[in-house]
Each structure stands twice: as structure tokens, then as C-alpha cells.
Length: 95
Image 1 (cartoon, helix red, strand yellow):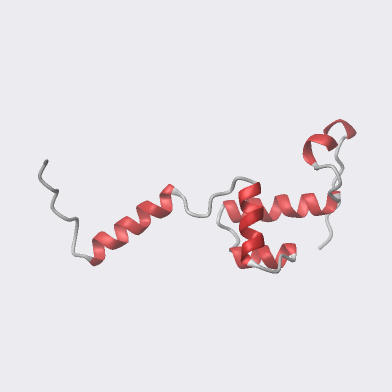
Image 2 (image 1 turned 90 degrees about the horizontal axis):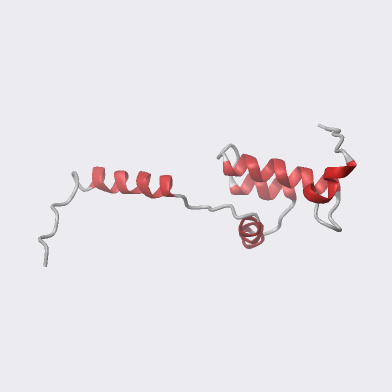
């Protein structure tokens, strides 16, 4: 699919880093937002952006301040552990 967008000249410098191809910037923005919203997996983003390794994807995510493991992930993991252990553990007595 080909998508054509028009960006007013006054916003180009704010939206596209110096030296980056506009089409690449747009493709990265779409892919990274889909990843952030969990509509695409890391593998799919790597394929879309032609990134050869997960380490390079991790660097790109870090550059764009996208966390791979969020608080919601922690809560989900904690709930799963509690379910598999038969419920929450008793609280420790105060020292």
C-alpha cells in the first residue's frame, strides 16, 4: 500500500530529524505507535522497518522512549503468579 501525506513546511523540522528520509520517518512513526498500542509485535515492527536484530529494535525503542515492559505487564504477571500459587501469600509480620 502506498500512502501520500502532505506536511506543511513549518512543521517539517519538528516532525522529521535532520538527514532522515521523510518516508522512513512516517513509517517508523506508524510502526512504533502500533507497537506502543500493542497492535504489532516486536517481530512485526522489525519486519516492517527492515531491522535485522532485536537489539537494534531495542535501541530504536529506547531512542523513542518506548518501554517494552510496562506497569500493566507487571500487574498481569503478578496476577498470573498469584493464580498459579493458589492465591496471594500471607503478609510478612513487621520486623
